[in-house]
Image (cartoon, rainbow, N blue to C red; front, side, top):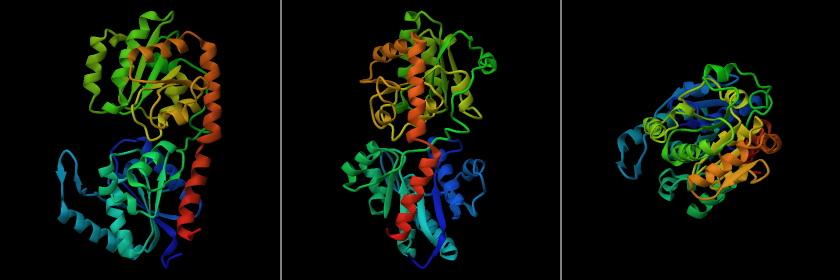
Amino acid sequence: MNEYNNKTIVVMHFGGNFLRGTEVCLIHTIDGLDAAGYKVILIANQPDVIVSRLKNPPYKLLQSKFPEIMIDRKISFPLLRYVKKIRELTHFLKQEQPSLILTSGGLPCQMGLPISKILGIPIAVHLHHPAAKRYFYFWMIPWANLIIAPSKHTHAVINQKCKIDAAIVYNGIDVDEAFFPAIREMSLRNSLNISQHAVVISTVCALIPHKRVDLFLRAFAIAKPKSRYQLHGLVIGKGPEKEKLNQLAVELGIADAITFIERVPEIPPYHQQVTDIHLLASDEEGFGLSVAEAAACGLPNIVSASGALVEIVQDGVDGIQVHGDSAEHFAQAILQLTESSELRSRMGQAGRQQAVDRFSVTAYKKNMLQQLESLLTGK
């Protein structure tokens, strides 16, 4: 135990102006620390996204940017801004005397680690997804006191690229008050102009290349004319590929059977009242929060057999794992589930049980707190 205030923890986060899986995890972490009696100082570039969802506001809040030094496709070397920000935050935290720094994601670690060494405060980094080796080293992750990974897959990537271990804490889902099976009613479907008789296949993700929403659309286009039932696709998410994907739906002749929604107030109603099958075709996931959320709502999942998705979906039990990147193979999985309501129900029930047993918020908060307190106490 150091000489600092052992009930104050600094959380550093860099994110966008909308809620992602990363922010959901951070919200659960801060709520868990608050419930355990810790004072949380949140330093973030977009704090409103976090604070608006917390049960209680943080003890202190500081909005701050994180200048990044990186050599990737482009060279970013804002050395003066980087040093100035380190000095500014070091002065601030020296006054607060926290006992621990927790960085949410890799980039804030690049700022937090020098500060932790200057002040003699341990630092933990919660990584949410795998990254290229250079990112780990530029972000200074190998020199953190504790690394927390959301899956065995992410742990394996870190270990393989950095030769270091990480604690595994699976992401948490509110399986009691948010994500749960509900009795169907049709008002939300009607508002989206989706037939109550349609079998709806949805994907919930950022519209970026590695999520492969284009593969979702191509598979849907193959499955639609082969199904005995009316199929409808639902894409919930925003990102730089939006226009490209809209155009692809037109080219595939399925635009009238695909609904794109950029942003929704809450995801659960769309799982509970609209969707019959959830599909995520990503070629890389550190966890796959949207898949676990869909399972918690009693939906079967179709996923690519890659990354951590194989840790969430048990092939043939609560969903279907698709190997490779063939749209035809994804279409076959869609047809297997659309043609059997009994199979959807059975897999959905199994997925719900898996979510309750392994991915509850209660388990997440307990495991995260255990890891952080072990670092604080040295036990």
